[in-house]
Amino acid sequence: MNDVAGVAGDRLRSFIERIERLEEEKATLSEDIKEVYSEAKGTGFDVKIMRQIIRLRKMESGDRSEMEEILDVYKRALGMM
Image (cartoon, rainbow, N blue to C red):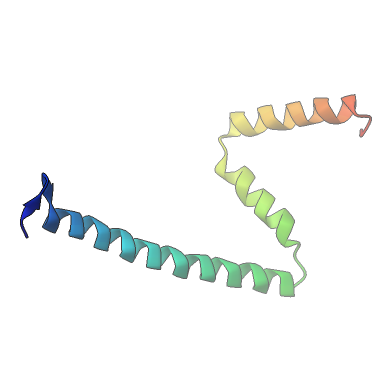
């Protein structure tokens, strides 16, 4: 394909097609994750808590500790502890 206004059409098409394939894979993975959560819920696990645990596990240990400390301070300030 020819360059149009300085854009290499073949290269652009390659990027677009790669992104489209990855988006399809992402949709499939999202559906798989949804099914796992549904299965966990069916066996009695609290899915909201599981999502929180996964979010916490993604965090660095130091960041997680700092967040928990600030959360405790806020809870004490609000009389929740």
